[in-house]
Length: 557
Figure 1 (spheres, rainbow, N blue to C red):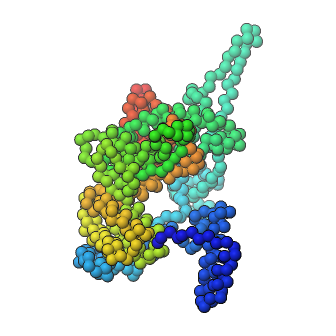
Figure 2: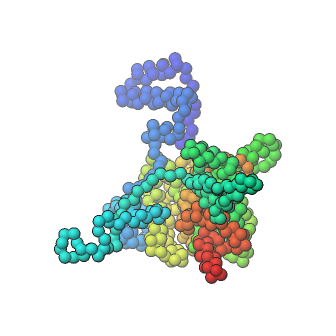
Figure 3: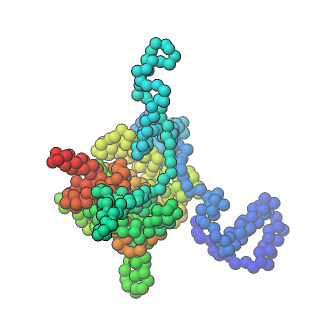
C-alpha cells in the first residue's frame, strides 16, 4: 500500500465537499460512510497536533491489536501431532498451492485441539518459605505418653505431623544495632577503660548489608537515591554516596568472578546474543562537546548467554560497542583449538562477529513476528505461516519434554519439521511469484525477510544443537531494561563496568538457583581466597568450597 498524498482544504472547501456528497446520487449509507471518514481524518489531525496520544491508544481506537498472546489452535493433542508427523508427498509439490497446504492444515485441524490446564498458580506450601523462622508450640495441657482425656484406656503419642500456620510481618531491608560499650574512669588518675566491641564486628556495614544494596540496585532496579529516601523514612539513614562505596567494596571480589565467567563462557559451543540501548552521561557529553569527532554515538547493553558444563552464564556488557563487537571481545578468551561455536541472534548486521568465525543462526520468532503484525490485513496467508511455525515449535516441545539428545533432536526436526518448513517456503514463494502480494507491501516485505535469511533461519534443520530463537536472551535483557528504566542512565563508564560485573554475577547465580545475597556475602567474607582461587568460588561450587574450608578448620583445631 502506497503512502497517501497530503490534501490541504480550507474550512469553506471542506463544507463544499460535504454539500456535494449530500447532494450526490450515492446511497445514504455510502454518504454516511464518506462523511465519517472525513470526520475521522479531521479528528486524527487535531488529536496529533494538540493532544498527547500514544501509538497504543491510536491502535486501540482503530481496533488494531498486534499483541498475540495465544492462537486458537495453540494446544494440539500430542497423539494427533505424532500421527501427523509423516512427510507428505505434497511437501514437494511446488505447482499447486492447494495441495501444498494440505499437510500442515491437517496437522493443525481444530478437531485436534485440546485444552491442557497448566499446573501451578495455587497456594504456596509451608515448605516454600525456606528462610522462615520455625516456632514449635507444645500442647498446653497434654504431653505424649499421658492417658487419653476421654478415659478410653489409650495413651497419647506424637503424630509428627504438626499443624502449620504462616504469619508474615513487615520489616526493613536493614537491621541496625547500637552497641553501647561501657566506659570506666579512675576517679584519681583519670584513666579511661572501655569495653571492646564484639569480635565478629569489623565494620559499620556488615557484608550482608552491602550485598542487599547490590541486589536492590542491580537486580530489583532500585535507584540508590530512592533507596536512601526510604531508609531516611524508617529512621535508619543510609546516604546514596555511602551505598555506592559499599557497592565498590563488593565489586572487588565480584570483578574477579566476572573475569572467570567470561573466560568460561568463551569456551561454550553455543551463544545467544541480543542488545538494547542504554544511556551513559559521560559518553553523551563527549559526543556533544566533540560534534565533529567521527566516533560512534550509540550506547548499548549486550546480553550474551553461554554454557559451562550445563551451567548457564549470563554476561551483560554495556558501552558503545555493538553486540557483535562485544561477542568478539568474549571470544578473544576462547581456546583456538575449539571448533566454531553456534551464534543465535537476529538478522541485524551489527550482531555479526569480525574476529572469530561462528555458525550464524537467525531467530525464527523475528521472522514470525512480521506476519503477526499484518495478520489482520492478510488473515488467510498469515494464518498458514503462523500455523506452520507453531507446528515446528510443537516438535521442539516434544524434543524438550522427552529430553532428546542434540543429535536425536536434529534427526527429529529433519524428519518432522523439514517437510513443514519446505511447504512453508513453497507457499510464501508462490505468493510472490504469482503476484498475490505487492513486493514492497507489508506481506511482500515479511516474505522477503524470510526468503532472504532462510538458510540461517532454518539452521536447526542442519546443525546439531542449533536453537530456534533468541527468546532466552531477550528475557534476560529485561534485567538491564528494568535497571535502565528505574535509574535512567549511568554517569560514567566506570559505573557501566560495575553494573556489568554485578548484573552478570547476580543473574548467573539466580539461574543456578543460588540466592544472590548469600553468594555475594560469601565472596566478601572469603575475599582473599576468592582472589587466590577464583575457579573454586563460582555460583555452582562456592558452597562446597566453604564446606571444605570449615572442615579443614575443624580438623586443625
